[in-house]
Length: 375
Image (tube, rainbow, N blue to C red; front, side):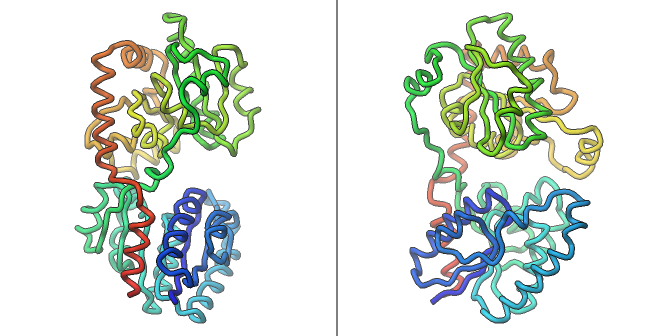
């Protein structure tokens, strides 16, 4: 009977962690799996010591305020590690916390696996050396990450991206547009302003200004806005007034990605998800001036879109900070909407991205690697 501790600290970690727990249970139905996770991991058969909701601490002042709680968590986890003596500790992203937990487990001689590794290639290069000292096995989900960690002396396997198991639409094109009261033959632009309140506030007004300008030149265009389930509808309604040609669409992100002719996507995992549907897109992002200047110092990569990072070149246009203007975006978007040659080029390049991302079954492969370390 296997004994495994898992530590995931964010909502995405709960999703990917739940699939991992499910696959681990398939390989060993009696496995004792416990640690930090969310509702999905608990439903898959993991005993929660702490819920992700209590661990999602963002910002320096919040971290300082929660120091007593975090110390309590570490004391508890230390006691659990000593008492249960798990054969394996599996870490899922969340590096600030998880690398401290790794140091604790390493001092007890526990084997450590990092599944969905920190984005050290973008910033936090100092963490690679720390991982090399502490981590026995890295399991990566982006193809270029494998060599980065192997070069650092960490045993590493690429298992493909977990999203490949979820990228499915529920409705066909005709039904999707019919439910929205829109035409399935009109040119459609999909706006994906992100899943955070700050992203919607920073990005959606400029996104809308750009598509309004595009519609003045080409009136036969309809607009879809993706609403993340956790966000309140009023946040969007404060930015735009709904009309027959603009629809706020809740919890149908993949339909928007697949059936739109062009996407405006906030930089993040959504750019990678959109690439799997081979829909032409532009990547946008904007933060406060101070945050941007700090980011310029810390971030060591030229492009911010995952699609472009994986491609090794800018195959999708990026409009970040001062470049995120109507005048700069308008001609590019118009060409990606109407220039057939450019559309075919970008679709071909996005097809290559999908090919590089491996095949479905990342959690299954990760579980086998973990179990082999135990055996």
